Every structure is written in structure tokens, then in C-alpha cells.
Amino acid sequence: MKMKSFLTLGLVGLLLFPTGCIFSPDDNDGPVGGSSAGLPFPGSPDQLMKNFRSIYEDMDIEDYRNMLHPDYLTILKESTRLDFPEVGETLDYTEEIRIHTNMFSGAPGRDAQGNLTNPISAIQFDEPVQLTDWETSPATDPIPNALAALFEVSFNFERAGDKTLQVQGQIKFFITSRDSLHQGVNKQYYQMIGQWDFTEDEPVK
Image (cartoon, rainbow, N blue to C red; front, side, top):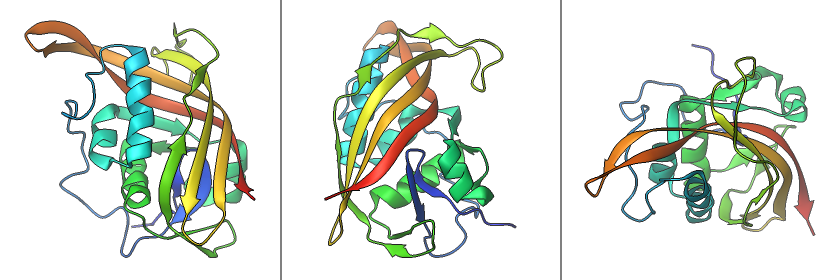
């Protein structure tokens, strides 16, 4: 089996190389479903985005796993594809979860030159600024027939003994919903089904 190099997340041009093959079979690869007792029920697009921010700052892989739809897709920015051509143009659900499992656990990484980088110890995620309304993506979109909106985002990834990496710019988020029974009431349960990355990253002095 050919092993892909992979990004710490769709936003950052860092690579994580955990011990062993990152795409070996795992009983826990599939979506779990349901929301964490520690997060509010994602009954609206706004609440889903708030949960997304909390998950990053808490570095909680189980909540991240639950937040993503099984058909999740990250569309990588051009600079990432050029730096890491072996990765391809997109990341699917399984790749995204493996990436975040290692990032949130503090695994070390490698940069585009293959040099080891210090693990991420904390993440500061400013409140995303919504730039466009949620609208249904056309059938010709890479992630079709989903609610989509463009956001301005800013992350600081702290690395012990190293400079903080700042990632900022725009991401187009794609979400979808399904019927769910919550506390005896029928509600829409929102999940993230995709991201289209337009961010830039640089070290913070």
C-alpha cells in the first residue's frame, strides 16, 4: 500500500509522520455520530461554527470526528498542492481524522523540506468572521448541494520551543443537516461536509 504524506490540517502546510502506516485499517475510522455532552447541540449553522472553534481550541478529536459528515472533503490550496504533490488535491474523511488525531495528540511533524518540527501544544482560534450568507452550492461545485459560506479565519498554532505559526485568510465552509430527535424534539442536526482552503501561513515573531 502506498503511504501518503499528509497535512496537520487542511489549513497548514505542516506534515505529520506518526510511527507506522497512517492508512492501516482501524476499527475507529468511521463516523461516530451524535454530539458531545460537552458541546451544545449543533442545531444551526451558527452553533456548528461555534462548536468548530471550541473543538480546535480544546484539541478534542472525538468531538471533531462527530462534527464531520461521512462524505467530508477538504479542498487544499494551490501552495499546499505544490509543496506536497504526493498528497493530491483533496483530503477525505479518513485522512482528515488521522491528521487531526495526530495533531491534537501533540505528535511531531515535518515541514515541506522534510525537517522535523515541534509538536503543536495549543491552538488559539479567533472567532470566525462570516463574509457571505449560507447558500446552497451548485451541482457543479466540488462539494455540491450543500450549504456554503465564506469566512475570514485566524489561527495561532503554538509549538513548544518554537515560533508560533499563524494561519489566516479565508475558508469556504460547507455544511449539511439531517433530522434528529434532541430532548424529545425534532431538530436539524448540522455537520461539516467540507472546507475549501484559501488561507496563508507564516511564523509569528
